[in-house]
Length: 259
Image 1 (cartoon, helix red, strand yellow):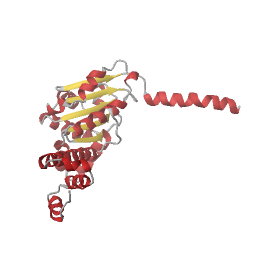
Image 2 (cartoon, helix red, strand yellow; image 1 turned 180 degrees about the vertical axis):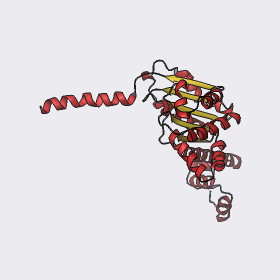
Image 3 (cartoon, helix red, strand yellow; image 1 turned 60 degrees about the horizontal axis):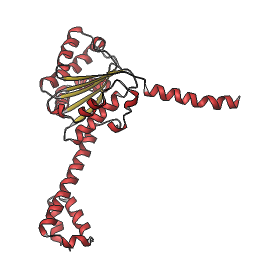
Image 4 (tube, rainbow, N blue to C red; image 1 turned 180 degrees about the horizontal axis):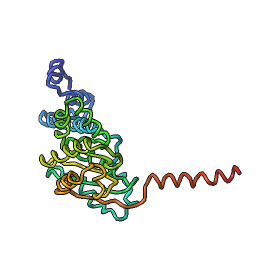
């Protein structure tokens, strides 16, 4: 099965690079000689499509700007006995994104809220959805800078374009009223457009006013954000705290020996 220069050129012009690479591999595969023309074309087309789908997923994951890669299978549910595992697994099916619904992970420090938000986002990328991850303090800073530079509308368009916006760690940093108003505007706009949001927070809803600096604005936002929303309240022991205590326990024997 020799590949002519003309065919190589045409496949490159058509941007069928994966097909060309697979065709070159088949040149050295004795089993390929038994393929009919139809079988060969079917195989090459399927290979090209598979490679393109994989590359598209990789592009969506890069565009999401996740700070790390966390998968659901790596989450330790044994630390969270009150967390309904099957419900979390079902959320990773991402059907709720197509319906424009929201998810809020609420709980104390070190319970894996960011882990689950990122694993949700990764699944969404793999299912064809566009995603953007932002720590809330960075998002507010970007909005404030855009406001000062008269480009808020451009940034809002970018934030509205994605299918899923992940707002991580709401409540960890306090910002002024203007920052709260800008964040409130984005979240309300996404509600009106039925664009999904994941929020992770260490604050109970009654304390969100500490972030947004306005009772009226907080009530209006929560009314919209929780309207089409699954709220997952997480309780348990902090993984980081447990790991810190374990390191301290391991150091104790060594300290006693030195004494």
